[in-house]
Image 1 (cartoon, helix red, strand yellow):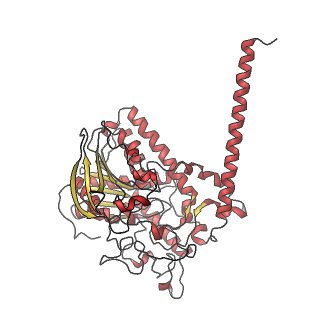
Image 2 (cartoon, rainbow, N blue to C red; image 1 turned 90 degrees about the horizontal axis):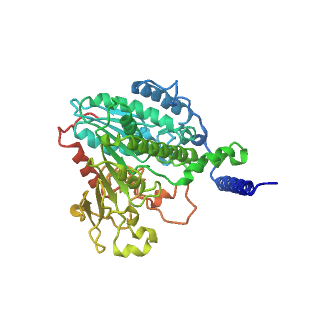
Image 3 (cartoon, rainbow, N blue to C red; image 1 turned 30 degrees about the vertical axis):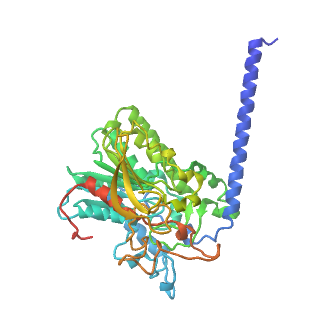
Length: 501
């Protein structure tokens, strides 16, 4: 006869087993539903072409075959781009009328420009007073930080622009890249920048996924005794947190080998018209970025527990309150709120709060409460770039320093452009006069490729270009704020505006 206590224990175990089975069954059903949904949706995508299918074998992969130094990485990159040219690029009649980055001579051909901004680049002024490493974002190229890098050059810094593995070539490269490939390349570039800096300042600057890599590289140096820690970290739209759905992206591997679901590994498939950013985007890229967010967060908490975070360099970050790519508040909640009092500053670009626009915003946009800007125990400065009042398009900076209950106002001399209601994730690092992504009014604007100023109206579903090119802001009308803050941390120094580029 079973003892009552044994009977109760048996009942609990039975309930736990039943609950576990139900959870497992629910998870399996959710996974199957997700995969079927992805498979059915992606079957409507355009046919995959060479940029989505070709394999390039000269790319860096972490492990014993990886180069030992940055010179070796650049040599490997030379072979990679030679392979790209031989396998993918082609010529067509009337190429000047075809928007395809892989058609030689087309408006989207990167070779049209004097400098190939799809590739890594090192520029060393005659007498430099520091070094800066610049890390671009996911699916784009070193071009994204061209202007920021030039700003460092103008102030006497040697600059290393890194092309991260899987980028600048074909979008299919992102189907095979791994987080540790990016980390390996970043480490090689960091070694080069550290050597160039010597005893002078070393800054690391990252945009989007590059911001996550910049933080990862800095944290690893905090953990390693004797390692050179950067003196400053600058982040633009950093991918500290991304939507949780990205973790499920690896599931598509379960079905994308089946002929009917070959497109299932792609979130988007479009014609490749942008010379410096892929239009097609695979699930693997999102998953690898999510892997990075988890590893960086774990490393950050580990270093904080070890009391090593006190050596963390000051961080300057720029983040749009409106950001459909990353979890915008993560830069505050998962990074800045953990930092010591070291002079860090978070610059937030608010939405356009002109009274007449209020009715068009979704309810969640109407409040800044998720940012908890009135937090009393902050160790860093918050700078909110926002309308002077709801009755004007003029923009000011409302700056609240640690321990201060009130904010002070600084003039910017800037205003919201007509018909612009917010910044975007991709807008932050580009000035209005960018020749490709700018507003199209600058003397240096490229009339053949006005990706930042396209204004096309008509029926939906008729174009083969991404919808985001038509409605997503590609430049930052307040880039002057970015410039002023970066110049402040660089400090005054000899101008090298005439240095070779």
